[in-house]
Length: 443
Image 1: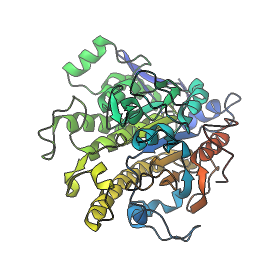
Image 2: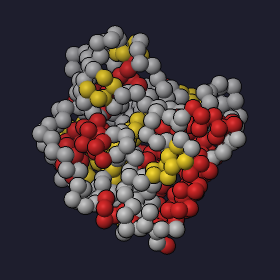
Image 3: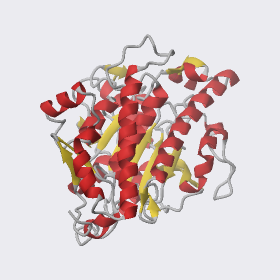
Image 4: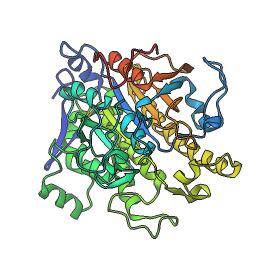
């Protein structure tokens, strides 16, 4: 194997497992030849439930000179890497004659722009989500068309919100109007899925051998890695070493987090592989998405921090009350202050994810520069249960599609799906309409 003929699909192999590689300089010419004339764009959609406390979220000025609101303070060092978008709306998340169920509609509508059929039976119906449209296009270039992750498993049936199936409150990705794409919440299972030879998991023999001797997956591909490092340039050797080190550290973190519950969740029995710390759970999930993007294992991911309507408590923030309960703050200052703590915590996790993307280099750009990351909620103010003027952040440049560093205020009522159609355009995917979209946005 020489540096002049390394394929973009080269993997490190050994004992029934394989590890995809990041983009190396030695691969660039071949990867971006006639089949793919442009460097790939990645798309990630991050969701938080129950809206935001909007007075602490929304900038008071438009353009580049806005002052960072309190909830967005954790993003201060990344201000030039994202836009705050206001005025965007999901009219199809309104009741429109269907009565209660704002939380179920909020999550289902977020990426589809369609009205969810009100049912708690098997006859669920929504629409194809933007991530799955992108996945259909990008999937021919990657091992996995998309990656769906989250911190709440949720149910796929039953009544979870005013006559709406739990499938609506639990799923953000929809392959077609009747088929949601469930997310995976166990980082160990995601890790095993990403770093195998393309099968659902390692061979039974290889996995048993690795776990019995407590060997890292990297130990199994060590010989192949040595050979590759001997045939690439200095910059690629450093990049490869950093990448393999990141995998090793993440593997150790997953195992350690699963074994050591913190004192706040000591009583909760969790499946093997899921960290007891909610913050660590979110960060490991984010790291897995970054690695999947870095290796071009997938270019599309959804990441749900918590299911819609979540009443998770945050005792580690001195907030023992449930999130959903606090979102109905009734304009009480004490509740608003606690809600703001939860909102700021979620934004802090967003900042961690964006910083990780920014730390990965692809030539003269960062992985964040080559990405479009949407973060937000399908509810505006949780107390009002409104679906207009949604809290939305668009991070990354999408390879030049977006000019970040601004607060862009659209006319109130502008469909959020207009943003998605514009994002697809920038990725070379041309769609006349998505859900209730009415046009394109200038980004």
